Image (tube, rainbow, N blue to C red; front, top):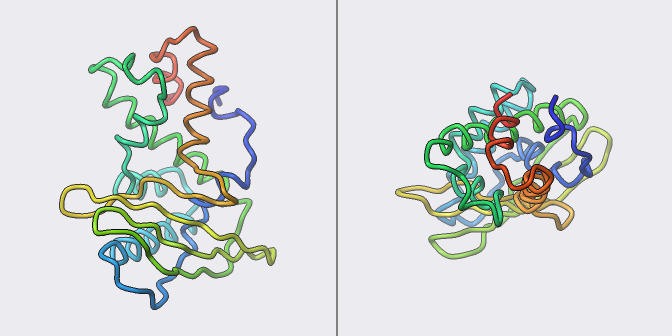
Length: 192
C-alpha cells in the first residue's frame, strides 16, 4: 500500500461513512432526500456485509458526489489537476474511499441502525442517523446530501464532529505538499 493509504488517521473519524451501511429506514419526515438516503443505506449495508473494495466502490460511485468531493479534497492544488488527469483522479478518489471503508468494515461490525430526521431545504439536506456496533458502542452520523440534476448525491458525513471530506482533504493536500505540489503523484498513488 502506498503511503497515502497508510497515513495514520483516527479510525473513528472515518467510521461514519463506512458504518453508514448500518442505517435502516425509520419513519422520518419525508424530505425529498429521504428516499434517496434509504436506497443508499440499503446498498451501503449490502457493501458493508460483503466487505469488499469492489462492493463499496459501486456504492460510492452510484451515490457519492465524487466530482465535488474530489475537487474539495485537492484544496489549494485544485487548479493543478490537468484536464487529462480528471477521470483517473475521480476514479482514484472512489477507490481510495472504497479501500478504506472495506478495511474498516471488518473492524466495526454493525448490530443495528436507525435513520432519523432530515433537515434543510429542497436542494440540500442533513440527515441524522444512529449506528449501533456489535461492541455496544453507538455513533451519530450526520449525512449531507445535495441536489444534483434530478436527484441527490451524498456530499459528506460527520461523525464525532469530524467531516469525512475535510479529513480526506487534509490527507490529500499533505501528500501533495510533501511532493512539491505535484498532483500527478497523488493521481498515480490513488490508482495503484
